[in-house]
Length: 325
Image 1 (tube, rainbow, N blue to C red):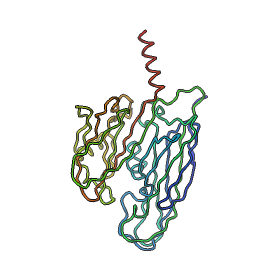
Image 2 (image 1 turned 60 degrees about the horizontal axis):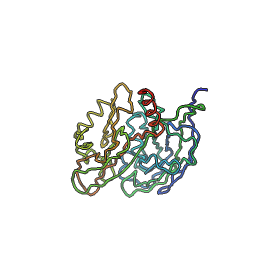
Image 3 (image 1 turned 120 degrees about the vertical axis):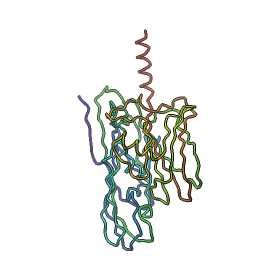
């Protein structure tokens, strides 16, 4: 029997401002992608001043994915929608208007566990076979995350969660690695060079950065980024240079205020695990940001990481020992 890929709608939930949802996800197959489609309307009865550029994607304040209680992914809705560098076409966004009236709107976000562009993308599919629990925790935002000004509105929005899974035949090779999303936000009241320690036990596929001023994405917060492992600097560019490199390497343009530190650029689309930034054994690995400070200045960071699983390490070790015998 060959593998089977399954794509289906799994769950639907109504948006409740400031609330939280726990969605029990399907167990038994290897998860390739989770898709979050927020759609409906916002009825504005008193006009707002402006609508933020990332629109209703900001209503998903945070998504956490837990497998047997362990967090394997955490990211904001805005960065999941607009910072998906491997799916340029995933940025589907219809923003509401600020004027009085009923306005249709939608946002689509994809969380990939497959190593998109990899030689064997399914090597990082999230294995759920044998798991006891698999959940998505959704933290909802407020209308003030979407609009500015003292407007008034009611919402009729539904979040549809869709899944794309791979059903493997009995005895099939298990995924070799785990793809992780780690998310953090840091405020900067003063201009500075900030050293952020990297995980010493993973492969870094990429780090996505987003600058923010007064709740709106901005290119005026991050001025330069550097990655240093021990005494070796492996990435060192200004923000303008990063944006130019992103356009050349990825053949796409990220929204203003976003920039990508790509450790495995590949114009031909083939990315191997060995191409990525390996921090194993390096407790002195750092992301170093040069930032402009301000009362509402913030940087949002999503690291795309690969954790090689123990059974894959053991199998490769046994193979090397066999070949050396």
